[in-house]
Length: 533
Ligand code: FAD
Image (cartoon, rainbow, N blue to C red; front, side, top):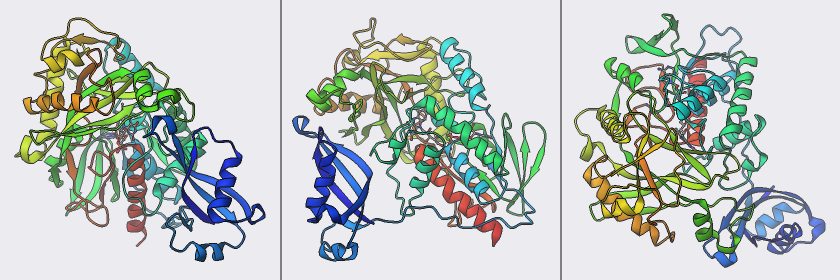
């Protein structure tokens, strides 16, 4: 099969144009073309009046070898790579030990699924509830402000990405095409097929809930076991080897192969691991606010007269600004047509994040606008100091919001002028339980406020209207990635505790649903190889 890349066609092209583009690119007759599939479809909207669709196509033709020779110097005509997934091991028939996966977010889900598919009958432990019950608790918090610290946006079946925009792209290097395995499994579980080929696939929150239930059923059917409302409170290490886990129900569970996929909000678990001398380092993360604009303004700015075209969908953006004070401000986890959500897992704290439905048809666009911070400069001295900084900022936001889980918010215009907001403009806040208009200038460190004040007008040069007075900032956004890294070796095991496989976002090896899923696959392979050697 041949792969053609960079095939560009106008946004409104007809069906036949793709075939025609293939024939003219390869200079072949239609009788030579057997069939083709779209591997990827992106767009180039740099010229609003001439938006182009950009295709990567996989093509079956007669005379493939000759064509490859003919186009040997053309980087856009190559053999299509084999992206099919191949298992690295199969469990022995007399399996004497079951591997354990802690956490059932995207990383634990894929680690558990792969181990189950290879026959290792994994036991998966999840501190939160099954996804339907968890949805009730989470939406209950958003409506009434009553937080369940074990069942919320961060904790429960599906992990942190369950109530999200379900964006499924990542910039991680993926030479083994594990990302394709993740996407294929999601489609098999009911995700829309277009995620196989659009360049920025997303699923939206309600579809994710159904898919996770189907994937859970597959793991169980293959011999795996999932225990909800079961938190790992302690680990037993004997001569540098993990041997057992102490569970919140009082049980001791023995295993010498444990995947640690607890996400970035398992602060109590990180403290426990630190106290057990598991090697942990502080790592950089980012802090800032959620920004909200009208989606129609973003669409108009990015797509002009083509705003609303169903192929383009709701417009997104990606922005970066390097500030005079040496800081970098960037947009993160942009949710077109979505809502800002309350994302705390601890009492007395306020944290923002964003989510959307598959349709992305809510009136506002939201994104985190965050400043990169590092342990060397901003929270030196202790591996867990980043967690303490997060807690401090989240508590400040709680207090500024009125100590009732309302989030503090400010109009962009007022923030830039340094004056408190008293009245909303034409952007209605989407955050629930609610917002409190205030002055955000003391809720983050001064360097972060200065950097964001400089960046917003700079972003306005790329997206006209970005610094509109009426846009809204809501805070604080502090859980952008893990503040720690649990170091692992080439075999994916902790550098000082054998049999402990730190994985996913919490351990510092992923950032997002797709990369967490990919890391889950890698770690499942490492566990399988270590159990069969
Ligand atoms: P998590 O998903 O955090 O899963 C960890 C799991 O471990 C949790 O379920 C937790 O309950 C469990 N756990 C923790 N401690 C213990 C313990 N001691 N015992 C047992 N279980 C434990 N990413 C994207 O790519 N696209 C998006 O659109 C997107 N939107 C997001 C929106 C929101 C609101 C949030 C919060 C995150 C979003 N993300 C998004 C980020 C994404 O969700 C995470 O990167 C991803 O979920 C990380 O996966 P993980 O499996 O490593 O960890």
